[in-house]
Length: 134
Length: 496
Image 1 (cartoon, one colour):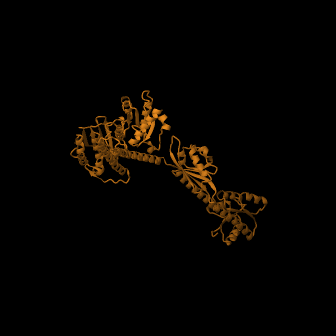
Image 2: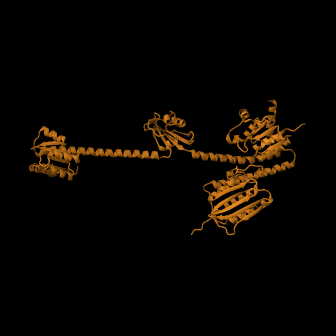
Image 3: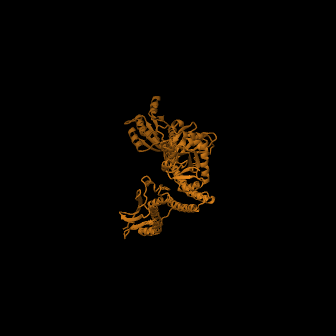
């Protein structure tokens, strides 16, 4: 077996990171973590992840979008799929979807928080499948 | 009439004078006499006469001249000319000078009485007319007063008022409406509303008031937001105006500026959103740890689950803390809060509070230093709130401290204030976050605070307590060196 698939988890919620890191590792993934948007670029360079799970609201309400934009503008990293996690639906009634917002917000998939570890793994696998097809 | 009727007879002929006096007195009239025009004028100036008999041909002052003079100060008195030259010309001349009638000499008592009584009847009628006119004027004045009263009320109402007739023309408005809508001067009754009111939303709401299906009892209420730069939120109520017969007159629109209410509401819902978020985050973490434990999703290492359960317990504990802080916070927010202010020796409270943190402090090997003078001025304060205040500050000074750090409490009177500072030698707060530390739910994020639990309400509560005691709080911090909070509380002044 070759190299394990590496996921970069980005969230300022330490519980979310710790729990999902443990679960993803148990499911055969390699996991790197970042706790703020400003840490992402360095982590991506250093860790070379295969997929990024990115929380939308961190330092600012739209930090996730800013990070995604920066990554997709980078010729080396633009191929890394981004799964954007949002918790805005319950607070603002605003819903994001890949169909309508993906192109503008430079994401590859959306998932709504809160989501269980199983749901996260399911979303990650779906995104890998979709990217292989595309 | 009940009142005495006064008659003046001016004639140079004694026979005529006395004859008239006797005839008229026998009828119950009060009669005075004058021998010439001049004397007649003097008498008339001194007393109000109803009727004056004037001889045309008199020495000193003739009848025509006398009548001219009389008219000058009494336009109502009835003047009757007595003349020996009863020609048409003299009669016309006398009439032109204000005489009501004339009687030719010689005359019989009956002839005199007919002319005099006719004159008096005329006098009575004209006086009645005058009285009625006065009454009418008085009534008009009252109506005018009523109108001006209504006008005063309308212009004094704080809500804006616009009255619009069936032709959609503005007929009445008040200064509040002008101010709210920013209408410029030159507003005229009868102007078309869609021409003079630039806020199309408002015109739209008013138009709805005219729609045929809005019944007599319907009040159309809508909120409109005025375009920038005002951006005021106005509650518009439009109701129909009808007379007793049910005929349509138009509509009345009242405008109520609810901008401030809206803002308060906005702040409230933001707060609710924040609270729900703060409650949900730890709860979903607990749920996540529990479900990972139950499903075995994190593998088979029992140590891992031990850690997860410990974290879940911490999160449950911080949820409880949050709820306690929220209760405390809402107690401070509520207006009915009763403070039991007493004369307190703050030094005692500080020493006791520091004592409570000995265990927590020694876990991180933090050294406590207390610099409190022996004699300490009293302050007027609520004991439990003061305990809460120092608990929050000292607990922060330990939580955000480093191992082997120090926590220093300094207290000293300065002027009318007691300065108490709580310092730590911990991680410090960056410049950007410093102004926000007293905001509700604000927590400084960084690698060092990642695992420190807190509700984000502790310092908000501290600030509220300080302010409710007429004090001040300030914060100084240097990243990596430490933070100092200084509380200034007014010293109890000795009276007398």
